[in-house]
Image 1 (tube, rainbow, N blue to C red):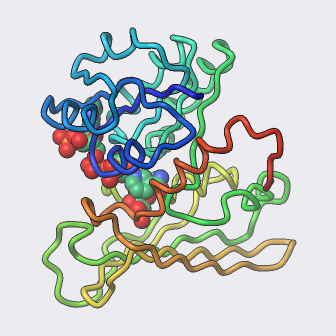
Image 2 (cartoon, rainbow, N blue to C red):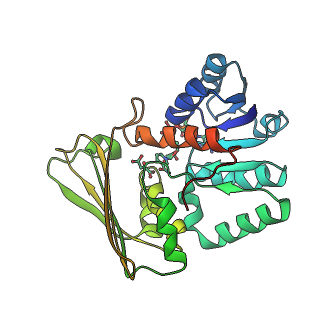
Image 3 (cartoon, protein in one colour):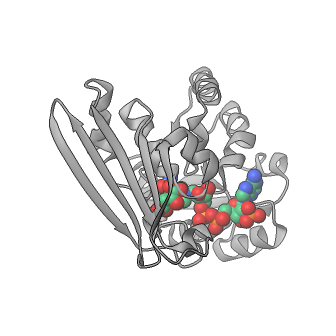
Length: 252
Ligand SMILES: NC(=O)C1=CN([C@@H]2O[C@H](COP(=O)(O)OP(=O)(O)OC[C@H]3O[C@@H](n4cnc5c(N)ncnc54)[C@H](OP(=O)(O)O)[C@@H]3O)[C@@H](O)[C@H]2O)C=CC1
Ligand SMILES: O=C([O-])CC(=O)C(=O)O
């Protein structure tokens, strides 16, 4: 059974810890002691607020479900310790210098950085962009005001530009945009909308290239404990973990 260390005991951490079937959550880490202890009790793991002590535990992979800042703080140490890491806050990799450094560390350590599909669909074949760059690659994300904590009463665009700039302003809402860009091999255009009529977190992907064109729309149910995070993001990690050791790999 794969043993994991869970970095982040919030909304996604709870879903992973309480739905894990083919994995064992050995240790959990959060900056807030009460959160770590409560989650550890739920999944029979050990709770840590000291990262170095957490890293002494016996697990082979760290699942990050915390924040962009946590990735910057801890990912390198995880890789250097000889563990793989799954990054839900993949927005941290929008910083090219940090990304290149982390990839080099992973290469030296012989370990993997995995960025799951998270709250979006289609990362597998967007990778064709790495061999045939798309002419257009746009993500239009629409969220209800609660997801962004903004008291907006009419639909409005709050960001238009490149993913690497958007993630700086909205690190809890557009990790998907950075993941899309990592898959496609280039930064992508992003529109972020806030809509009081929207009941779901909606991601629309528009791609045009030599292959033809794509339109994908995902209408995500917000997570029960964090409306900014779509429930699908937690399911995506659970699925990644379930398939880690499967000899049959489906999708590009
Ligand atoms: N790639 C994707 O598709 C998606 C990515 N995400 C990202 O996944 C992450 C987890 O989401 P979710 O579970 O809903 O978030 P939550 O805010 O519910 O939980 C995150 C937990 O991690 C803690 N935390 C944050 N930073 C650190 C740190 N440096 N060290 C230790 N603990 C830390 C938080 O504490 P505190 O509350 O004090 O900050 C909180 O307890 C977020 O970064 C989110 O933006 C979410 C959805 C989709
Ligand atoms: O959950 C979502 O819909 C997307 C999200 O928050 C993110 O990418 O950071």
